[in-house]
Image (cartoon, rainbow, N blue to C red; front, side):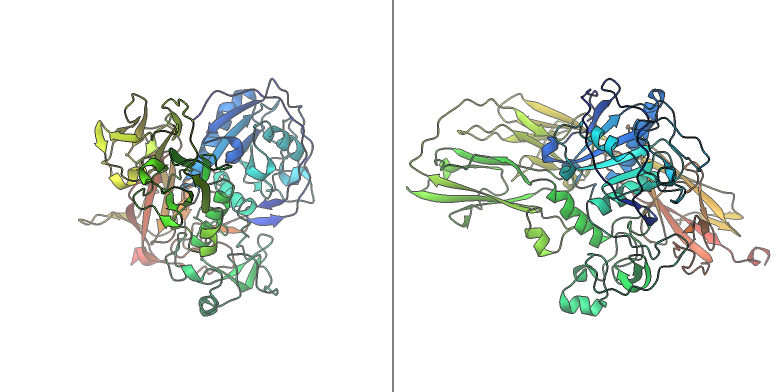
Amino acid sequence: MTSPGTRLRRAAALATAGALLAGGLLAATPSAAADSPVTEAATVVVPIQTTGPADKRFNIIVLGDGYTAAELPKFRADVDKHLNVLWSTEPFASYRSYVNVWAVEVPSAESGVDCDPGLDAPRRNTALGMGFWGGCNPDSVQRLLTVDNSSASALADLVPGSASANRQIVALANSETYGGAGGTFATASGGNALSSLITPHEIGHSLGNLQDEYDYYARGVPGAAYEGGEPSSAHHTLLTEEQMKQQRAKWWRWLGEKSESGGVIGRFEGGMYSTKGVWRPSKHSIMKTLGYAFDQVGREVMTQKISAKVSLVQDHTPNSAPIGDDRTVWLDTLHPVGGELDVVWRLDGRALRAVGEARTVDLRRLQLPSGIHSLTATVNDPTPFVRDPAIRASAALTRTVSWRVDTEVTTPREPVAAAFTGHTGTAAPVGSASVVYADTTHPADRTHSVRWTLDGRTVANPGNDRDLDLGALRLRPGTHSLTARIAGTKTTLTWTVDAAPAAGAYTLSKPLRTVHRPGEPVEYVYDGPFTMKLTAGDDQEGSVVSQFRVDGDGWQTYYGWPTDADAPYRFTPGGTVIDNLVYGKLGRTRAVPWDDATPDYGTHTIEYRTIDAAGNVSPPKAFLATLLPPGAAKG
């Protein structure tokens, strides 16, 4: 999907941004102005992923600061890493086809950003004036990473068709220090272990209006008890589970289900910077702890918000005037990667069942009685991510197009060549569970059918022939060739299908002993802290995301260690406190110092898996880790 960069003229703009740092809410702090003027010759806009016109898509615009001309390859690698983490996170994984991604490359005169890592660090001459400490403000905090708002907006305006209403700006700093901010703008340090996990969290704020589920305002200081009324937040409440069910309020439809972020959907105390008096749906989700998934409640909100940025119906037969019954009627829809949209055609209120899910109806075959008729097509997204009928019925997930059919109207015949008008990108492999699509031109006197072949064999695809759900085919592992052809022509498209997940592996610190039992995972016995490093390799290009989980809890994106992306993850009985957050407690998780630190000695199951650039999720593999209590190793 990558194409050569296009040099575009720089535009001036002003914007303001709040600053909501992953790990604590921080007040907005103006940053210093950009040091280097951004010149037309130096700035390049690179379309990383193009799924449609910018004015019809949700646009993520990634800016880089503190990367010199020689370091732009590092910026591209950081962008790739951030995006692959985003695409591994639902609902972005299923709706990445709704999103365009642009990288704006502008070299800085000097490498790095201001006040990194401390106020005594040198100031850097950079294009966007990014800096820690809220832009080198001694009254701020070190991890607040700000950007010059006007310069960032001006660069984002270089993307034609993008505007504040349809875009999210993400500014990456050339730094390995932990930091970021969010709100209208999102910032993150490009090279830090946790940096790629900040982006989906901040988009949860700026796009989804989701609130932090932290039980603290400032790190290391437990929040006071909540004293307000019922929160407007979709994922916070004062209600008990029984009250939610009785009142059909908040997340009552999801109660009792296994949470996508671990545990079950229920009622967990703490959130909105309070330790007591308010409750959230899951023990930990991405809005509480970086690296976990959105739980079902947050995922439903994000699905609605992403879908609301686009229109399910992209184009259709003109309907401003009556049409005749001597023609075909068509509509083009969006194409989620995670599943096909439903289409229901109705004539005079009655469903045209024989048409099924087709995107084109030939009115000539209906033999309409003389007179005036009403034809409608209702497009609906049947995603299981949404259970609220109000959300499902909203314009984000349901659209209806209507035509007035007059049998006295004659349709003029105009030649329309058979051609594909839009399709899943062919430059990169598609995943084995993806929905691949191919739209065609629409002559008024016939319907262009799309025929699909896989490895040279015809694939049955009744109903909607514009989409092919590869997941339903259960492809054997390996690489496959997929072709779409317009029936009766030689017009084709070809994709490489990657049905081989990336291979993952683990490396552990030296155990006290290793136990092998037939048919069971290998067990490693430790009498103290131990480390785990996850690595992955793939035969295709693109970053691979590794994930792990302990004792069946939620999958967590592996990021190395908070202070060093190359350092292994460290498990300890009570966890390690870093900057007043807790990492690596074996067994029951612990996020903040005041969480239960009771060590979970004994045997634990640690699973690991990979998600590659095509979206393939590997089957999980596992090993056992036994942590002995003090003195047990001598017994």
